[in-house]
Length: 79
Image (tube, rainbow, N blue to C red; front, side):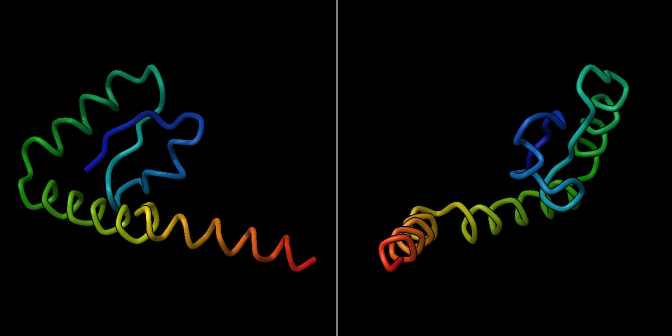
C-alpha cells in the first residue's frame, strides 16, 4: 500500500484507489483523510497492499524489466 503526493512520475507508480492513494501536494486535509482511511480499515489496507505487491511483481520485477529492455534493444538492433 502506498500513500503519496500526486506529483512528477508518482502517478505512474501508484494507481489511486487500487494500490494506494494519491493526494494533492500541500493538501493536509486530503493527507489526513487518506491516512485515516488506511489506518482504520484493515480490509482496505490489506487489499491495497496486496494489489500494490501484485503490481510491483507484474511491472517492476527485475525479470520483467530486463525483458522489456532486451525487447527494446532487439527492436533497435533489427533496424
